[in-house]
Amino acid sequence: MVRREPGVAALWDATADVPEPGDARARPMYFPLVAPDPVDVHVRTYGRYDDTSLRWLVLTPVDTAVTFP
Image 1 (cartoon, helix red, strand yellow):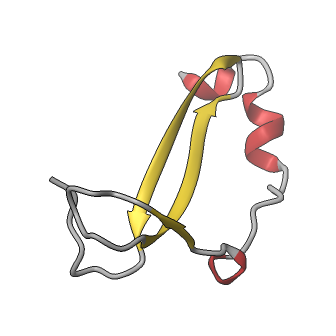
Image 2 (tube, rainbow, N blue to C red):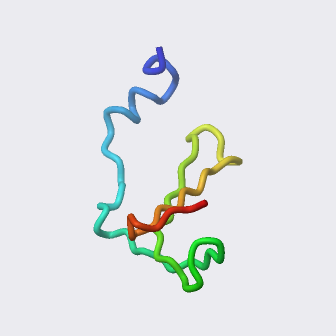
């Protein structure tokens, strides 16, 4: 069971310092296969607590009509 792993119970019971979605600023990025002009995206970073050598960057377009190929 994951909850029995060291540190998981404390993490589960603690509050996280996560910004509200409204605080996240969109950032313009250039994707030539999507549009000739910069596209506003939200950038999110995910990773494991026990391994700081690996992070996932997730780009989500602000405009839901925009799709990445």
